[in-house]
Image 1 (spheres, protein in one colour):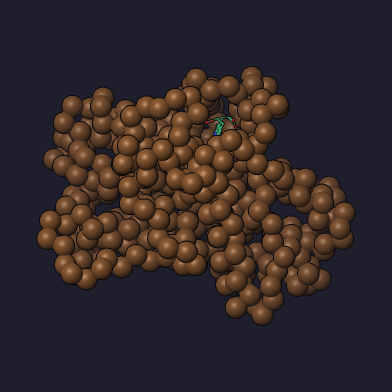
Image 2 (tube, rainbow, N blue to C red; image 1 turned 30 degrees about the horizontal axis):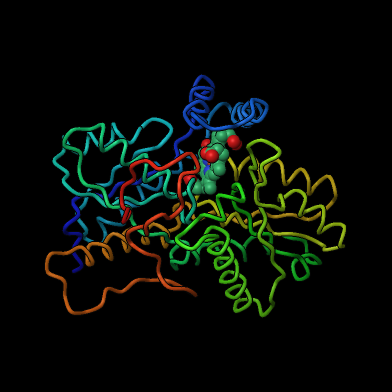
Amino acid sequence: MASPTPYDALLLVSFGGPEKPADVVPFLRNVTAGKNIPDARLEEVGEHYYGFGGRSPINDQNRAFVEALRADLAADGVDVPVYWGNRNWDPYLADTLAQMRDDGVQRAAALVTSAYSSYSGCRQYRENLAAAVAEVPGAPRIDKLRHYYNHPGFLEPMVDATLAALAELPEAARRAGHLAFVTHSIPVSMDDSSGPDGNAYTAQHRLVMEQVVARVRQETGHRYPAELVFCSRSGPPHVPWLEPDVNDHLRDLHAREVPGAVVVPIGFVSDHMEVIYDLDTEARATAEEIGLPFARAATAGVDPRFVAMARDLLLERAAVEADQPTDQPVERAAVGSPASWDVCPVGCCPNPRGARPALSGQD
Ligand SMILES: CC1=C(CCC(=O)O)c2cc3nc(cc4[nH]c(cc5[nH]c(cc1n2)c(C)c5CCC(=O)O)c(CCC(=O)O)c4C)C(CCC(=O)O)=C3C
Ligand SMILES: [Fe+2]
């Protein structure tokens, strides 16, 4: 049986979100510390949270994932505890690392709830992990697991979700509709510097989009027109961010007499606020306003294939890090493009505000 050695724990690392109205402003302060987010945008985002009782869905999604992962590991006989810590809200990374240390954990593999390369989606987590390790004397060693945007455990649930959403569209739109693949907008400069050679953020999303379109074609015999579009733009208006916005795109489809759209949130591993607000609330309202048939594909969430992916990545990396490697090459599940690196290359996804310590990198 595959062994998790040298890892004695798995750490789920996420963004965190508020759980009650009184959490919203302190949470937003944590997220935006040192960043140039206009006050108007913060008030707007605060309203998104208040509209859902001040509670983000993200923490409950992570609790469910941790439970499902514990069950998956137990069923497979992989005896490692699962911990969970966030960048921006309780349970904070440093508290979780202190707990892990107290439990005797020496070395843990970290799965981040962000599948792609970018400063916000990768290095910022690595910096926060480094800061938490520095804050906790005797903290375990943490190895961030590789990007998994092209892992079948992430892609296959997306294919099924896209097919299910297509089935929700009215008959006429089911065949001639378009697929709008949605991810979080980031500054154009952040995309330009993402990954070792730049533009990894958009390139990885396009690979995912192509894979899903190809798999949907296998299942339906039809190659759906598809576009990569963006949600949740923030920052000052004069700074360019990735476009088009999903709402503008829906209007554009309507103007071109496309009879319906399936929105596939490929940038999000579970139903985050961006999904339930930006897509289910705002984009759906746009579609209703213009009379465009609309369906939103489910996120991976606790799909058993996505949960099993976490086990697979842990065991894959354990085989790489093992003291006595076998002569068999380590198998790395990946579809359409090679598996991503284990350790981030030098200069990958730089911090626009200047270098600081980050874990799991060659620099
Ligand atoms: C690429 C990316 C991901 C995906 C990767 C990943 O998952 O990490 C992501 C995830 C998330 N972003 C989240 C929330 C927020 N992001 C903000 C701000 C920003 N995000 C950015 C990028 C990303 N963000 C950027 C470039 C900014 C501008 C400021 C900065 O340079 O950092 C702000 C401030 C207000 C605003 O500007 O909108 C909030 C409240 C939540 C929690 C949602 C919930 O509660 O369910 C999640 C999962
Ligand atoms: Fe964000």
